[in-house]
Length: 292
Image: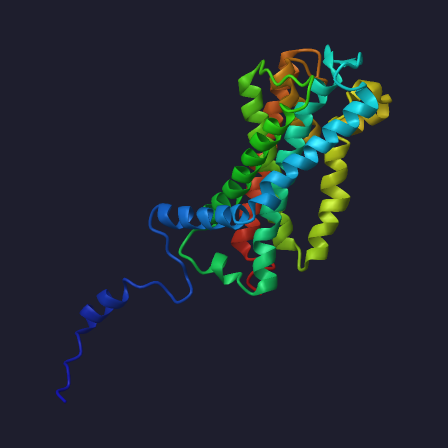
């Protein structure tokens, strides 16, 4: 064996100077392939069981519409009107938005929690993607499921007589629908980071998400509540999602008496999502409950 000559000190320093310390990630540019791969992994995960994740929520929401319309609105020919339309047309947009946000939370809250319980969390931590790209993939997949559920629910609503889904303000439908899905997706990822078992996830769903969504004005206008409860409702961000989404269909809302009030609600949701995204970024970057 012939000994190879050692490089000079300068060559050695130049060679070793191109490497970063072990364990320190280096991201050169935007990893589009990594982002797309993780996004498609999450989409295929819920699409593999689409009967449970997309079509079942559509059927459940249609049952809500049938029950509440028959009980409170008197059916397709019922004379009860809310915000100038029959009760079925009033409640339908709220049910679509509620189905979207609930499924957005369900999708994003399972990702990392399932990885921690099944021991596959390394699939999220080891790939060469940045924290921002990880967030985009998880939130994007949850929003995708929310949009698919919203389309399925809207299609199911059209089967019910007396429901009109004519769009008055397309921007409000798109904005409040997406902002609501993003809001619950961010909360869902935060929940999956914090939770250590499925019971923790179920607790957040049953004691936080479900009450907030059911008491958000989906089945009523908050003007019927006492002033104190109206103030509490206006502190619920999901109220603005439901009412703003309904405004896109009906052209009316109980957020306020003017369109400016709806615009302020839209801006407020955007600011809230930016703040939650910053919090989630800091949590993921710190590795809290993920790397220990």
